[in-house]
Image (tube, rainbow, N blue to C red; front, side, top):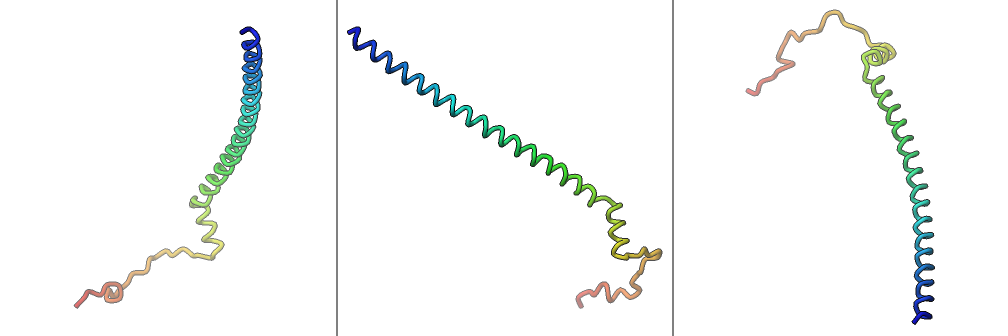
Length: 93
C-alpha cells in the first residue's frame, strides 16, 4: 500500500508544479498585454486632448474672423432689405 501512495503523491506534486509553472507564465503574458493596452490608452488619450484643443481653436470666433479675413469677406454696415415681398414670399393663389 505504501508503494502505491508514494508514486501517486509524486505524480500529484509534479502535476501541481506543472500547473503552477503554466499559470505563472500565463500571468506574465497577461501582464505584458495589460501594459501594452495601457500604453495605447495613454496614446489615444493624448491624441484626444490634442483634437479637443484643435476643436476649441476651430470653434472660436477669432478663428472665424481670421478665416473670413483670409477669404476677403467684408463687413456690411447696413443690412439689405427686400422691398418687394413678392420675391421673398409667394402665397399660393
